[in-house]
Each structure stands twice: as C-alpha cells, then as structure tokens.
Amino acid sequence: MDTSKSEVLHDVPPYIRAYKDGTVERLVGYEVVPATLDPETGVSSKDIVIMPETGVSARLYRPKSTPTGEKLPLVVYFHGGAFCIASSQEPKYHASLNRLVAEANAVLVSVDYRLVPEHPLPAAYEDAWQAIQWVASHASGGGAEAYLKEGVDFGRVFLAGDSAGATLAHHTAIRAGKAGQELGLKLRGMVMIFPYFWGKEPIGLEVTDPFRKAMVDNWWAFVCPSDRGSDDPLINPFADGAPALEGLACNRVIVCVAEKDILRDRGRLYHEKLAKSGWQGEAEMVEIQGEDHVFHIFEPDSEKARDMVKRLASFIKRE
Picture (cartoon, rainbow, N blue to C red):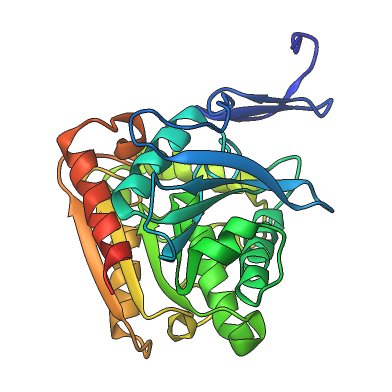
C-alpha cells in the first residue's frame, strides 16, 4: 500500500493511521489464520456469516468431544483492539479462544464486528446486539446453524470479551436487560477481561501516569469523536445518561484486571459499583499481579495466563 503521497489525518500509535484520502493503515492486528482443527486442544472451528446485510461474520468453536445428547454452555465472545483493530481471525485471539473452549468444554461464537474508522461507532455496539439476537433465534428452534440448536444449552449462555470486547459485552447485557423476554434468551453470566472503560477525571494509575492517560484519551477521541469525550456513556458506564448497572441481564459477573494496566482502576470501579448497585447477582473480582493489559493474548504459555484461563473456564462451567 503506497501512502507516501497522502497526508496523515489521524495517527493513533501503536494501532492505526488514517489518511486524508480515506486510506486506513493498520499497524498491528491485521493478520489472519483460517478456521481449522487445532491439534493441541482438539477444538474445531469454522467461519459463518451471521448478518448478511452487513457482512458481519463469526468464528464458531466446538470442543473436542462430548457425550451423545449432552448440551454445552455457549460463550458469545467479543475481541479487543480499541474498536479499530483485530478480528475473530487474528492468530493470537484464535489460539487464546481454542484454549478457553477446551478448558471450559463450551461452544463459543467469536463475533467479527465492524471496525472504526470504516464503520463509525456505534456500529460495533449494534453488531454485538445483532449477534446475540442471532444466537437467540436458535434457542427458539430457528436459526441456520444446526450445531447450535442441537449442541447448546441455552440456559447457560455467557457474554465475554476482553478490552473493547468487554465494553461491548457490558452494553449488550444492559440492552438484553431492557429487552427482557422479547430477546428470547436468558443470559447466565458475563466474563469481563481487562475491560476498556474510561472517563475524563483521572483515577488510580491514571493520576500517576499522565502519559498513558493521554494515550488512551487519544485512542477514544479517534474512535468516537463525541462532544462528551471520555465521558460518553459508550465508554464510561457511570457518566450522566449511562444506563443503571442493575439492568444487567445476567446473575453472575467476573471482572479480571491486571496490576500494571492503565485501565485497571476502571475495572475495579465497575466491580465495586456493580456489587453496591441494586443488581441481584454475584460479582467476582480477579486481579493478576505483575501483568499488564491483555497479557494472556501475548504470553499465552505463561503460568499466570494459563491460571487465568482456568479461572474463567471454572466460572463458565459452574452450575
């Protein structure tokens, strides 16, 4: 791609550059691997189009084997990437989800939602909502994916995501709560892995690390040039006008944060406010010491990454 003659409109390191001529250059997260049978875990996967009108697809993961007639929990997963990079086919995400599926013995749908800047927000939020509606269509016997209808226990459906994907999970759970029985699906729980929440007024590490605070401010200003800035309810669940947490449509939530992550204190605050809200559910908190944001994606073989995946799998498997 020759961008030498085009003026840079937005430079958002280390992720992406957008040029005045409309060209978008993703610096990371653009690699893809095919869906296949993973020899290490025995997990198989395939890609499916779930919204033909927008072209949004998903990667469907199935664990190695299950007894005949046994129905498994279903995880609907949203990848991270600050809303502007990565995909359900990205190699590190593919490897990570193979491990989670094997450990949890669950079916997983990894949603390949549309990205900024080609598709401005709230497109990704709408895609997340459409994806859970697509899943719900199978619970009532409709839907085009036979394995979901035959192999999934729709009484055990979980929303999950890391970073921006955790933000999408939260908003989808809130919207599901508002929809109530009209959705046709009851969510069992939500897995929040290093959630990407933000706000104008610094807290915790944001106070002592103004450089990274400014960097995250810049990311959000790029993906959502709102007059509310970092207090837009899309990214700040406690901003004026944000939906109340007690509306979450699930009864169990686990929030994972990392000690060195600039987003750490927002995840802590989310857990704290959720536990103190009128939400009638159980909220768990996990903090990984000595690690930074989404370390498990970049260091999947580390002991802490394996332990974290086991903890999340246990949360999903618990009755």
